[in-house]
Image 1: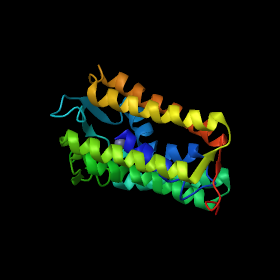
Image 2: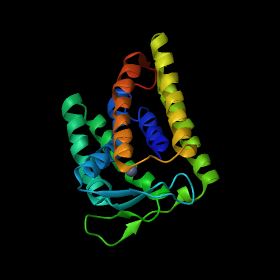
Image 3: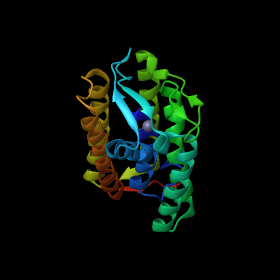
Image 4: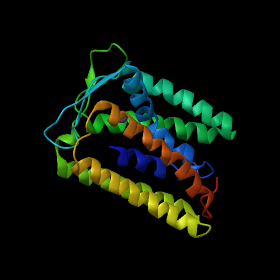
Length: 221
Ligand SMILES: [Zn+2]
């Protein structure tokens, strides 16, 4: 679903135009940055399991610290406070916090029922969109298109880098999405965790893009 999380990050620029895309893009990915760390540390358990569709390569056996609703809210408050502190803008804190929670909501739409409400909860949420390849592609790709469109409406390039760095990021995300959806599953969980952590590189990339773009008139707060 990472393309859907990226969509939320791009779209939130319209809600907080003065915030760097770095803060906004990292927010909806935060839980997926914590999850591989917790898996590598042995705090959470995930196994690779070939599912009925290529979107279902993982069995999330236990991931309450990164992916329960209650912990999503805790991480959202912490991240929002952190963003507010560093940017000195309350709006950035609020939008970044909401971005963190959006991860849980997006996962709840696509995952099988494996998302706990709180650590230790026996109630698991998940509507299972990933059971259908055509529906998944339709929903995730249109979300992504809408998110990028909102971002390009809220900002305009200041120079060539502002245009091409964004185009390259969009192309990279689409290629990585196609690779994840139609390529082979990860060989083992360590590789999958490290591959997910590599998405952290999106943050400096987003900061770079944003520095070469400016907020369009009428979008300033
Ligand atoms: Zn997730």
